[in-house]
Image (cartoon, rainbow, N blue to C red; front, side, top):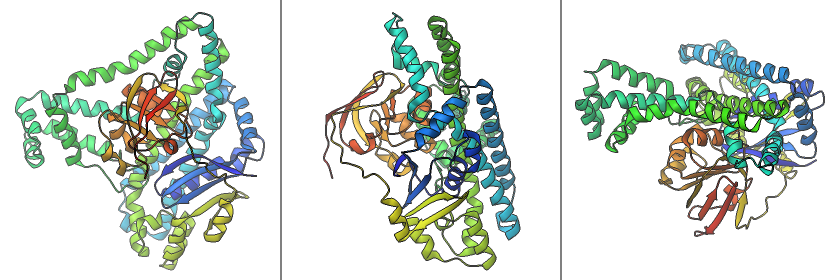
Length: 509
């Protein structure tokens, strides 16, 4: 038995990731795929973490789920249950929003945290099912083979471009909702020349004062802040976007002469254009029922994956008040509390104290796996033993990388590795954004990129979805981009072919 890291991310979302491990490697998954799931584990290392599976056995799990997902009724059931679980998490978080965390008793904290954990676990279980079926791009390969056959028969298509169009979800993501809300605000501001002039000045305090004369716009701005202040929070912040931040963005757009009304119109037409492009392609290619089903699987997976990830960051932002209150009661930092299980939090609250040293060891390095349906956490020397089961990462020296087309197009530019929100300031307009994977907190950097390249994901991952919405060339699933490329490298991306060529290498540190 040996392990390989399949997905990586950054933050300290111990509770959420435990719920993910519990849902995706526990007994409930075994009941669905009718076999004991492959051993899975999480590795945490100073806020970096990775999901890992036993690579010798995960293929059997994938084969079982791939067979199940071919049933349209099963797909419908998974979709409905995943949406229900997302709604349940949203409901529990909204209840928390209305609560003064400082007035909760230990019993009430226990009920609240267990309820949120259970909803997260359910969401991750049903979300994982379609993901599991598409491990190794299993679903993508079926659709790609069909498109390649059609091209060989004379269809005038580019396979990558056709794939991207056919598998794009038609539902509106929260990211797209934010964009439309933002440009609606800009359009309202630009409808009044006096107010537009104030925004162009960039003087935040004066703008806030001026907005009092326009209560409709002032309320619209406050609503926008309330609905989207989580965008840069990721799993543990600390950034919560405020009114000043969005005023700054609006001022910048106004000074650049961006037409809010036109941008809003373009965004509103985007979904209609995608639907028309899909219909045109389907009419031309006439895929059989089996391929149509796999296209539906891909679209469903993309929609649900974006919905889950965005809801996770939104929920994490609003769970923050309770995490900070628990930290205050235990004389710990929020970071330390975020590395505790719910039962550990409650046990320590009942005692009125916690040992910071073992938490600091856990933050430094720990491995978590499931044993008989329960999470077992290894730190220190025990974690080091587990880490010996992982394949060593070899040094990478390549001139070209290959991945999957998420959105077609070409771009040439300088590489910038963007793994977390703190990396965003180094991004410049036209740079090539390279990341293990993307998330909503990286959106400002993604909007500046001339192309996006990731290690992970298929054509329904976060990077793929956002790149389609923003119409930025994107290659996903290269596996090695964030290790093979460095800041300062010059690369040429041909997203239609799924290739990234290294033109020149920057200085290696």
